[in-house]
Image 1 (cartoon, rainbow, N blue to C red):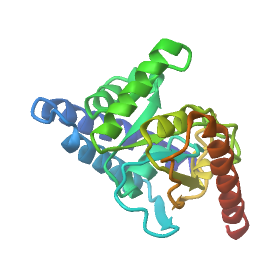
Image 2 (cartoon, rainbow, N blue to C red):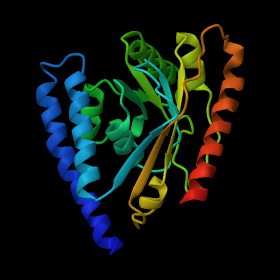
Image 3 (tube, rainbow, N blue to C red):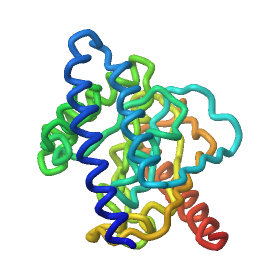
Image 4 (tube, one colour):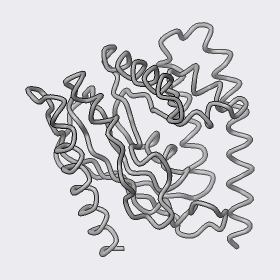
Length: 239
């Protein structure tokens, strides 16, 4: 059964990426700000989730408001991106590693929509990526960042890099912590053996950064890591 599900996932991702990616390229001529392209990305994600019978639920600790935020999420699977696209109720762009932008059609669509490429192996290009993220915040759009830098193999939180917290402090933008739970069971890192079919997206309370300085980055990092570990542990116990 898992082989059938894996085949369906691969085929659906390829077909939807080709279709919606080419559509995005055509529309990009008229959509300079990428807002329509973002809606196309959401539709791409919805079709992948729907076709593969994946349930994505959203829960919140209060009403976060429209933002803009530096949205900090854990990273368990390639399915995190479709799950967040389907459920995050904000106008936002994602920061992604450079390798994703090298994928034909998919990467072109991401770039046209205003998604932000980060090359962590090159400090100069990494700084350029953060400048692009600052631009999105200044335009009133939230920015989604996966500060672990790679996917977790077992769902446990990996050590976080500080760039997302530095960005929030520099722009005085509140941090919105988010946990994605269950996606590693559907599509674990390093294999196509699909398992469970439910993903839970949970939004925490916004963390203000106004009045804080660059020296607060470690404090904020520890606060977000602690919240994420607690939330993931609670989800594990209830599932």
